[in-house]
Picture: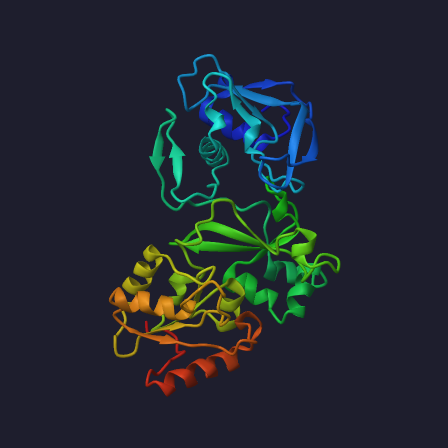
Length: 376
């Protein structure tokens, strides 16, 4: 492979088009561009203006009948730009039929080339002929080299990622061995994942997403929202509404605790599953009910332990709404609503206290909650 500025992008294109199907234009020449504020009529934020495109990859457009290779893909296409907070998907242009003026096509092409889905309601991929086909939840690659936390703690006990987790009362060794959490020193494509704790999200045994956690509770003393830095940064295209963290391990237990996020799961234990928010999509609800129907209905329980604070815009509390959805959809087991005190964050609470609190709330309404291991 020739020396190129974006070997990940170029290598993917060569695998799909062949070595002769991808021409490198202006090899080794970096892009010359500037940043400006958005003009009236444009979406707010920062925009890019290109003076010289630099290295590009010329190929046939997969969306139209392009026989003259009139699609030019810049070497910065699909790479996270911290200044504009975008992936610069506009850096691909079809000069045959202007196919890439359609933002959806930009997203699809990014998915197709990097093999990492870009967020949209329905995953769409391209066949080798460029046709759109429906896609399922896709297995994705890690953002870069992964150093599992238990191995990192063993070889570098004073590493800043290890020390930060210990300050939050999380055990890096358990996080590595039990949850597969790791440290990424340098991401290949998405720079936002560099020097972060990577939390893999598995579904049916495959990694379908990951979240990159900033190491620290602020950015050099500045709150995340003020600094413009994401505390958690998700892999592009991650289907939050379709999967849940630690789902398949949790549903093996007769009591499953539904919580919001990953730190809540770490605090509560392997019987909990994180739904990445305060709602649960219909497909995920169906998966949960189907899995719980395999347990003895006399002892099986679904506990709703979402964060207690209610959004002002919601007329119905999110715990009550999810409870009604599960009941109306024919939950084959008992469903227990647990409202924590407003000042309590499950992800920062002691496991013993959390479990005792849940059991007490269950006993109060005649629903016994068990934290035993599943029977083999």
